[in-house]
Structure formats: C-alpha cells, structure tokens
Amino acid sequence: MGGTMNWSRTVAVAAAGLVLCGCAGATSPGAAGPSTGVSAHSASVTSDGGGTASGKPYLVLNGQTDARPGERVHMMLYGVSRAQGGDAVSARSSALGAPVRLRWEDDHYWAVGTRRMTAEPGWYPLDVAVHGRTVAGDRIQVVPARRPSFTLPTAREATRPGEPVWLAFDDLYPGERGADFTVRSAALPRPVRLVHDADTDFYNPRAFSARPRLRSVLADGVYAFELYGPHGRRIAVRRLTVRASRPGDRDYRGRAHGPEFYDPGRGYSGGAHTVRVGAGRRVAVMWHDEDPDPGEETRLTAASPAFTGVLHLRRDDSKGADGDDPRYFGTATVRSDARPGRYPVTIVAHHGRVRKTAYLTVTAR
Image (cartoon, rainbow, N blue to C red; front, side, top):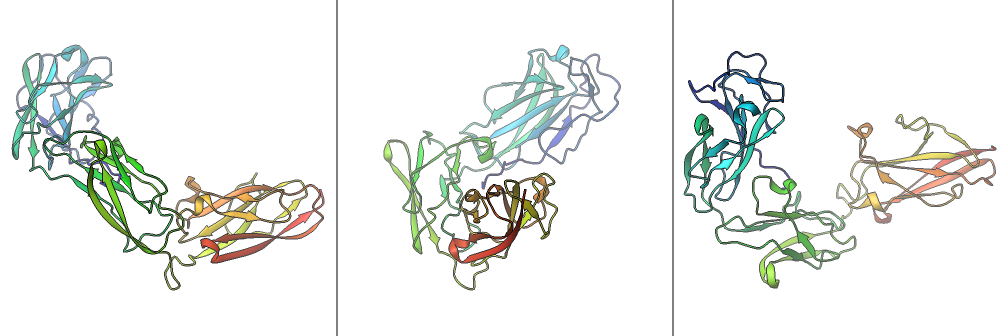
C-alpha cells in the first residue's frame, strides 16, 4: 500500500450500435476519469454540463482488474446527458450483486460499486443501462481473496530513531469486521490507531494505516510492533530493526552546508552571500543537508548573540526548493542594541555530530 492509490488501467468501451435517441455527431474527445491510459472505442463527446451531449455513450472504468472480493470499481459514463439519463442510469454485474445507480456530475454519470465478498475468481460482464436500455459495457475481474496482512515496509535494513514508519493493515477477507485497530510498541512514543482513508487505498475499504515517528532516542535493537483489534485482541506481531547512525554510514554526518544569510524581503537566490544587517533589522538563515537526520525539521535551530532569541528552522517544502538538497530556513531579528561587528551564527545538527558556524555582519541602524 505505502500510501498510494490502487489506480488500475482505464478502458473506454462503447456499446456497438446502441446510441440514445438524439445523440449524433461529435467534436472534441471527452474527458477521462482520475487515471491515465484511456483507450476510447467510441465517438467523441461534447457536453455543456447542463444536459446536452453528442456521440456514442462510452464507459470508463478504474479498478476493474486484479481486484479481490470486496474491492471497489469506479465507473464513469460519458455521452449521455442529464436530460436523457435523469435518475435512471444504472450498472449491473453478477460480481457486484445488486444494481448500482450512477449519479450526474459536471459532464458525466459516475458511481462506485463493490464486488461481492462471495464472488468467485474470474471475469464478469458489467453493463450500464439508461431507462432499462443497455448502452455500454465492459468486464471486471475478481482474483482470489488474501488472508489479512500487517506490514511495516522500510526503505533499508535498519530504521533510524526518529524516522517515520508506515504501518499498514489489510483485512479485506470474508468474515472480517471492525474498524478499531491499534499498534503498540516500545519504539513508539504512544499507541497508534490505524485509520482508513483514500490515501491508504481508494479501492480497498478495509485498508488501514498510519505513519508515526519512532522515538527520537532509542537503543539499537529489534522492536516488536503488536497489532490489536476490537476488544483488545492481539492480531499480529511484526518486528523492526532500529539502529542509530554510525561512523561510516552515509547519514552519520550527512552533507550539510551553511548557515547562509539573505534578505528576507528579496528571497533566497542560492549560494553564500555577504549580508550586512542593521541593528533591529531582520535576516533570513538557510541550511542545507543532503541526508538530514530523521526529525530534524522540528529540532534545527540557529543561535547567535546577535539575535533576540534562538531561531527555529523549518523545512522548506516550497516549489523553490525543488531540485535542491533538503533545506531549512527561518527569519531572525537582530537585537536593537547590537553593536556593529561580526557575530557568529551556529547550527548544530545530526544529534550534535555536526556543528557549523558562519559570521553575520551587523551595522549601525
């Protein structure tokens, strides 16, 4: 799962020879749904959103392949106007059980159907009808069900203290119930509740996840992560190796440079610049690190006897940071009573393993 949606391939199919009364002629291609790879086998469609459309009806599906019992399929019907369809557009498939009513939105009809938990593996026809008349169709797939699974995917052999971890539980399986799942571990600051949302898996209604951070200070070792369900029943246990960075590791000292100074009114333009700041004025501080320690976006500070207080730096996630090393910045105020001269500005990173100082020139007001 890993926080990505399970968007399947998209197919557009028109029912051969089945055209609603009044649908003739075509201009520009119709818009596709929330996925890519649309293959249209129908006439083009235009719609003004108010109820007129031209061209053959065609169906766009997402999530129609490689889906287990209980997973969803997203359906969109184009080429049928609201005036033509009204509230009488529905989809039928023996994989879904009961008919599913499609609703109008902007320029098309749409619905989300759920495969029966008892559906056997195989391919099933899906037909869409308007006022009882079939106008488009395709097929949807059902694959065998899988036993519930609890996972802790990691990017490397050992996870660092303070690093976020992705906890995921998938219990889309016949007979599974409940939505109260909690993970407990000595590596976590507190128990973590797993929740379901579209970021976990849009098509799987029983995918639960969370992304907590490990404790910032942890002894090296293997830690158990226990998953508990409703009524405190322990469901599964997984183990994670946690190890602090050591000399020789790429991330032991990272590749940090800075601090750099710039005029906050002009913005950061890259590289070290000579900045002269008047007493009582403001100055911005920038810090780069190719491989920062986990959690440094909440720990990094810049200290200087010229500043009115300790400056907390925050991660720069703006478009301007794209393509650059991870960088952190903040804006400090120079003391109004600071005498002209050069003042040190120091940043300590990587749990004290990295300490860098640059000098800021303060002038009279």
